[in-house]
Length: 289
Image 1 (spheres, one colour):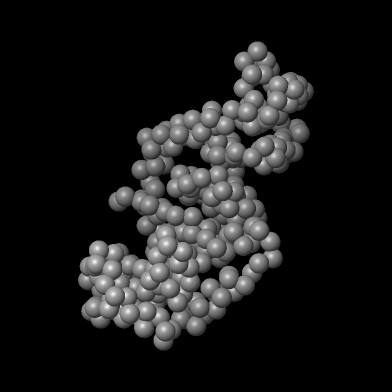
Image 2 (cartoon, rainbow, N blue to C red):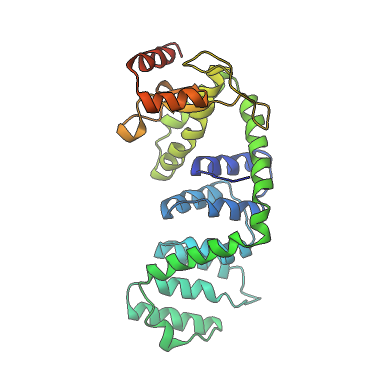
């Protein structure tokens, strides 16, 4: 099974794990990181881990997450977090120091980091590393290497099983929510503007909740042709696709009054023909929500 996972699903996955009172497993976290698209998404993902007070094993930080940290202060924070637990058992966490060097902005900073590594008990090649400051390109290469190695690992082979378990968990969660409750969650997400982190996470979260709301409103019936969904998915839910009436690419909003659930054929029709009567019909559907 080919897996595509966006940030809204990843955030929801972490929320559902928290609801169950569990801790995410390394293979689950690796799958999430693999599907993150850029550093902003990595930050949102990492903020969610911290918000839920998850405690991933150090192996996740050192073998996976460290490659995707592109902010100097975030790197220092992660390094200090790990080293603070190692006062009586100093392990050779070389990556923490070398990654910091790649992110620092001067030779002086690189020398300072090398001295800190020596104080910690690590002897790095000064001649090599002192010239590696400000090397975001090298970090990008490390990310590509990690993804390549992941694609050829046993853990990657297990991604489809992990994702299928998540989809089942997601389906069960939304099935238990009433239309009214689901709508109230979306409204609450929109109103929570306490800080940038909350606003960023809620924006991504709404994407999944709005999609599920559109499907729940449709009740398995295409909102253009009025026919039943062509088939059921693996969880037994009617398969419909969510369409933004005013395209996001043209300035449309990701809001509940801008989405409808369509069968795949009608979804394709909408995009191919852009018929005015079709547009009016689905627009009327949202006016009664």
